[in-house]
Image 1 (cartoon, helix red, strand yellow):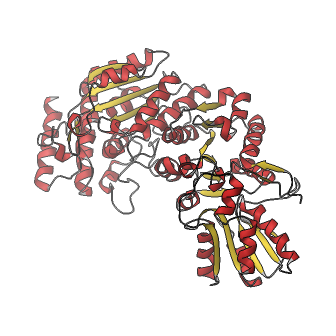
Image 2 (cartoon, rainbow over the protein chains, first blue to last red):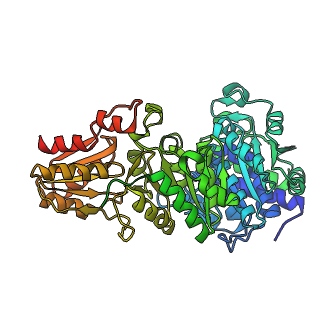
Length: 279
Length: 309
């Protein structure tokens, strides 16, 4: 069932964010910043866009999502739990011994995870392979792939983008989670990445720039992507690392650490507040 | 057996893959701008819609193969061994071996026998790297017949496989009626003076050495280990019990490959002195394949000398 009501989707996104905080707080480790930045995108994908059925996670004709920035696993697990792929209570086992919710997504351990990722730059190649396979099979599947903006410093990403363009993969939609921060700081200062729109246009992509936290804009971008034929689309989603948690927003230090009890309480209060007043 | 007829295992690979492509429509083939050398070009000509040339981008080669396999395709991904197991090692590790995806990595131009291209292109540590990956089946075939069998057989395994192939033409050892099994070594001869345990291009060298030794009154047996992992523990232990000496020979660094694998088995199950012949932990150099085998002492005469001394 696809949800089209914007307010309803916004509320689900807040729930997804709460799940992320629960996971990272329970695990006492993990990556909250880059998980929170892509929570709205994942919410729209799983509740509004993708042709999926949580009761049939292995259906060959389903759409696929490859979380190439695998460290945002808390966001993926949270949206999958919210969607009903597994019990939300499991989120508290994230990163713990005996849990299937590994630090980075494992396709063989968690229903709904379409590709094992975690080593940056690799998921996008797998997504390209899936898009080629779907075309070979005339399956009509859409393949979505979320890349981090720090991740695109990996050379393999550009190898994959060339292949996507060469093979005219209009069934592939890449979302670039452009939160502008990587572990050591701002992306243009650490790795020197800049002019992403120009670069991606020159690689033969249909490029759409949006506010990655505006649910309507995200839906519109996916709609345009579906209508674009003969070339792949990349949505450059301008996002805020740590979005929705006051003290985490735009702070590189929250890339990979867990909140204290006090911080956890503030984070949950922030999100509860967002639930009441809307975004 | 008639060791005069020669064919490179990469040639057998290309020809058989094109035949298999007719029978199994799930097979797709990927290459990284080396299809004329790896011989996947034969498949490409016949099945252009099931052939993907990714260009000179081996990391992407492995990732695309992984993605294809999640849709039920059986990808055979080929490039030179140094770029497959070396350059794309971590892609193989994290995108293929860890998720246990059904990708067949068929790496050609392994070993010193690459020849003239020299050290940068002579992969001497691929068996070591691939052997250490959980879920990975590692194979290294010794002749045309065995390679053709392997190409077909690995399609029946649901999981990742690394198949090491060679550039140099090598003698045809087996008959078309010979049977093989993954994980089972082949004992040729029943001499008890020594067991020469070989893999890939060194199997025919070991057989030639065996003939020369016989003329000198020394009776050896040759063991062809085409599956490096899982290795045939039973056969190795049996040979250690039945023969006076164990000698391993491989076109690979002395560290980490066949010799090491044999040592691991014997150290655990039947402690025996093992004499290893291989590339002595150094990089290769340019030259003709046969010259290099002689230079690095992995040819039949080197095996003879080892046994006699």
